Length: 230
Ligand code: ADP
Ligand code: ADP
Image (cartoon, rainbow, N blue to C red; front, side, top):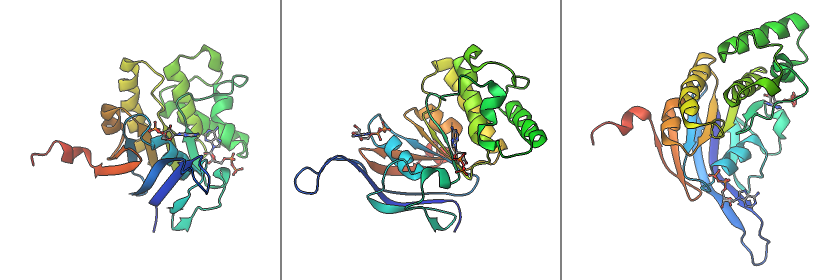
């Protein structure tokens, strides 16, 4: 078994054992992501996408079901031991470090030459060649998210988890960056799960789209099937 295997995962907030059942944000969801594939979790606000992604990351407890990667159960494995990369709506760059310092964050253990080479290569991949010494405070919103993407790819995560990484940007930029993001993930062969409420974005970025509503997975679709006549 390889890739990500999510089985009957339940995520719940609040509640107590006696009376209050709390909020069931994810009500038993299963899906697989094969190595090199990009899966979008698509659905309206509040349907549980973010909770599910956070559970895969190890940021929320899985109260029932399991998350496995490359055949190993990740139950009890803390977030920083999973070998996953994370990227959120606001990239949360380190303001006191320049662009290269941000991208190199997860690869500080590499020898300097290798690190510089990897930073250069990643900035090229995300369309920011030559930006190494720029202060992050001088970047546009789109440029900041490109740096955040390069940073999360630097340690070659075995799985990249993206939670609405384009949602804070304006519409035109979002469409352009969605195309670029899909291209970068494919070019780098990155296995990824991408959360979005935007239908067009899901189909631009991902190979497979898992449609969620009210804590459940409604269907798993491949873009080409959606447009096929019944
Ligand atoms: P989405 O990412 O699709 O917008 P979320 O996973 O953020 O959905 O939320 C799913 C449900 O869980 C919602 O009803 C939301 O209010 C609830 N929820 C999310 N986070 C928390 C939390 N930290 N505490 C309590 N309820 C939460
Ligand atoms: P380790 O646990 O091996 O010492 P880290 O805690 O630095 O390593 O990172 C573990 C994983 O988490 C890395 O693969 C990296 O992709 C991801 N990661 C940690 N912090 C960030 C971040 N700020 N941005 C993107 N990815 C991160």
